[in-house]
Length: 409
Image (cartoon, rainbow, N blue to C red; front, side, top):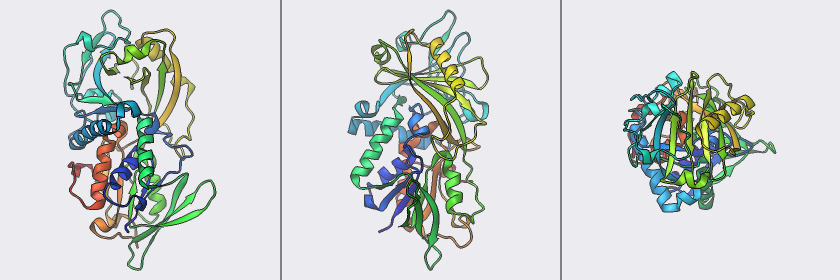
């Protein structure tokens, strides 16, 4: 039985395990996660915004596949009740001048601007589509930047918990907290096993395997270096840190959900700060957009404390843009999103020549080392499609989306 070991039990790793288990014995799939608390970075603290057609050309086919799968999975399993799935009206907002849009899918990384710049449409403001919780001021500008049915949202933490529960129910093995130590080869020099260690008990376990998937988000490069120490390949995956808060106020629940949920992208006078506000099912509102490009990646997820000054900036934004004086911060977050220099994810098999001297893998679907990381702010949106495509790659099945432009080079 071919065993697959997945490093990273965030939303990308879980999605891969979920769709792998549709076509191979679930007990042959192992998830390895080192963070003391599950979902303690982007998978638990991201906004959960989903878009069908806001992606760069290289990611566009994956964006469509993933968006449609989010809807299908929600319809099948009651996603609105279980993880807050909801079609969403997306709007741009500026206090004094017109909200500007563009066509590039990766400008958010190059320029530190809003993801809304990737929105393909820009409509005349529709009064009934403006959220009732938005605090209006004279001279402001609001425009709808999504076509009907092209954007949605989820609570990523709840979606991750659902995927994990389903994986475990099927028989997928979770090793937590644990990390990879090394890999070993057979007499032919091909990948044959992975050694992991429980970080609480220091107990080492050898997992016979021929396939490895690295889906550890911003930590993917560190995982690869630890496992393949003789490799000269550096995975081109860095991190972009960002703070967020979730706020609630009396009477918001009905206002938030009246006419459907909303995603608001606002311009801001401060350079590099583009507020993103998502009103979720249940009446809570997620506020983010404050990024910290220079923040150093901690040793593991959850290892960096939330900065009080960043929370105060987000709190001030909430006071400025949201109606209601009795709002309460119910959650503060800091996550490290995995990014590549070109703003697109890496979804590919690593060539044997990049694994280091004396290391190879079995040909075709019999083996391989794969990377699925670098999704930036689109990790939740692209997660399910990524899981489908990675599972197809690993199992040698036809791919449901063209990801040829998402390789390592």
